[in-house]
Image (cartoon, rainbow, N blue to C red; front, side, top):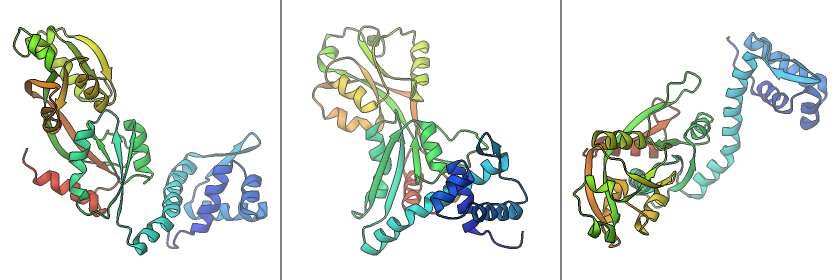
Length: 298
C-alpha cells in the first residue's frame, strides 16, 4: 500500500459497524446511503478485504472487519480524548494519569506504588478499580495509561500488552490486640486458635497463603473472605479476626493500637506489576513509576 489511510473512509466504516447497517449510518451522518456505501467500498479496496457481510436486515463484520473495527475503536476513542488533553495542556492543568487498579490489590500498596508519579502537585490522577480482565480490555483500547496488578500480563496474542515488574512484598499477620493477649500458642500455630480473615481467590496471593497453611499443617477457621483488601483490614481492625497484610501496609497497621503483629511470613509474597499497552513506555508519569521501582531496594 503506497497511499496513506483515508481516515474519513475509516470513520464511515466505523459508524456503519456501530449502527449495524448503511441506512442507519447514513441517517446518523446525514448523508446519502450511496455516498456512505461508496466510501466504505473504497476502504475495503485499500485494505484488500471485505469488511462487512449481510446479516438479516443489516450488516455484520467479517473477520477482517473485526480486526479493522478494533483499531478504529482505538483511533476514534483517542480522538474523543484529544480536546480535553489539549485543553489541560493549554490551561496548565498538569498531566493526567489514568490508572486501572486490579480488584484485590491492597489500597495502601497502590498508594505506595503510585507515589513516585505524584511528586508534582499538578498531576491529575484518575484511578479505576475493576476486574483484571476488564481493565486489560480498557488498556488495550487506550482508555487507561497503565494497569496495576498483583499478577503478570497474560499470554494473549489478541492483546498487545506488556508487563513491567514493580516489586515484591512479603506478608505478615496481624490480629486484634485482645485476641493476641488471649492466644496461648506461638505464631503460626496460634492461627489454628483464632478466627481468620483472608482475601478471596481474586487476589493472586490467596493461592500462596493456602499453600503456606498446608506446609505448616494449619487448618484455620475462616470467618471472612474479602475482595477488597482495605475492607479486609477494616474488619480485622474492628476485632473480627487475624488477617494478612503486605509489608507496604505494615507502618500504618503498627500505628493502630487495636491490632498487634502476630508474625511475619517472608516466604509468602505479593508480586506487583505494571501493565502498559506499549513495549516502550512514552507516558512520562508511567516511566517514573517503572524507573522508581527499578531503583528501589528489594
